[in-house]
Amino acid sequence: MKILLVEDEPKLASFVKKGFENEGYEIDIAYDGRIGQSLIQQNRYDLVILDVNLPYVNGFELCRLVRRQDAHVPVLLLTALDSLEDKVTGFEAGTDDYLVKPFEFKELLLRARVLTRRHTEAATVTPALRIADLELNLDAKTVSRAGQRIDLTTKEYALLEYLLLNRGKVISRVDIAEKVWELNFDTNTNVIDVYVSYLRKKLDKGYPVKLIHTVVGMGYVLREG
Amino acid sequence: MKILLVEDEPKLASFVKKGFENEGYEIDIAYDGRIGQSLIQQNRYDLVILDVNLPYVNGFELCRLVRRQDAHVPVLLLTALDSLEDKVTGFEAGTDDYLVKPFEFKELLLRARVLTRRHTEAATVTPALRIADLELNLDAKTVSRAGQRIDLTTKEYALLEYLLLNRGKVISRVDIAEKVWELNFDTNTNVIDVYVSYLRKKLDKGYPVKLIHTVVGMGYVLREG
DNA sequence: CTTCCACCAGGAGTATTTTCATGCGGGCGG
DNA sequence: CCGCCCGCATGAAAATACTCCTGGTGGAAG
Image (cartoon, rainbow over all chains, first blue to last red; front, top):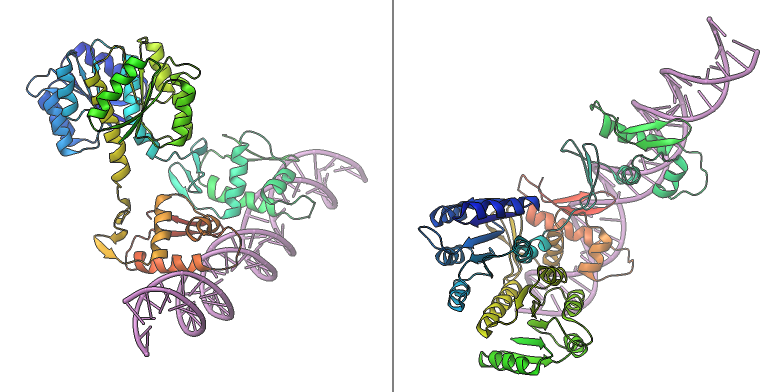
């Protein structure tokens, strides 16, 4: 989530910057309207926070400019001017919110969250299982180690997913047979061993740190080192 | 443009009502939380304005209720409580804006406009779906690759749209059957395979980068490379 | 009547899954 | 100490499952 703050008071700017950074936002600062303008043109922000009183180009102007360029970036005006007139000007310039100084940072954060909410909603959250540098994407059904994509077959994937869900625990062959192969009775097959071997070939081969470990007489376990 | 105002102070309510009506809005009033709740359930509003201190069901509760029902209606909380705590509660309940009494009507109007604007924009502006150089226009129902227009039949389009909405995710045949063909039962048909084949011929043939990929035993996925 | 679309069926070609056979190594009894 | 057995690993073949394409049918639309 990337924010642009255009604010000429250095103290306030750095205070706000720190606050957002603590919340995991990435934030750029411009100390005057002209710099703000060029940053807006060069970057894609998720939110623009503008002070109104700025050198060279004021916040209202800047807001209009943003709207002419890209109607979708949310804008929040931040100003000491509490008069209704100014609010009208601000909203007519196309701002999405208007916060009057002095304000508490927490409120700015809350309002910023609302304005950026729809973006995060649109972005699909991809839950990922991981251990060490191995990552398993449940949506894409893909696996990567050290960023390198590894193609697995259905059974290989199912086995790895089960082991990864239980990483750190020793899993018996019986458990694996039930959960991954849906075999409840005892067929004397070594298919599990074979698939563990396949996974080792694809996941551990060539890496100094092995992730799949055999516990003799017990089963298998996924853990680092 | 239809608004619901839930406010137990008759004077303020009728004042606000008149104001909005002068601006061409249609506005319903509920004098307590319970009535508000039932109105929300029966109608489709473009904006809901809630007082926080209400008989029976307070504004925070009502806001949460709205969010549980329909995440998209904009909500504006209107209250005498100026404490940060209450603002936090309000925003956590899912409100889009928070206005402290006493306020000037004009400001309420401005903020209401912003909220409804954002909503209508979001509803009408349909961004094109795309992956790599493939682009699908949801309004025009057209598809192009590398700028070249591609004609698809209705079913082909429906299938592609579904895959593109879920790009990056592996989609099973069962899902496709349900969502695109509306088959919930298991007919042993291979239409899906056939249509994927059609899409491949039209979309991927002749391009070095294939977008439609088969994940054996799982389904299909749209991704680059 | 012709064309286009949606769907079905069968078989070739692949990929995956399973089985089978063999090898390795440690622990144990002789 | 030595050989044997057990549990495990692995390569390769066999069995199976899956996917894809071609060609064809019926029906709707023009």
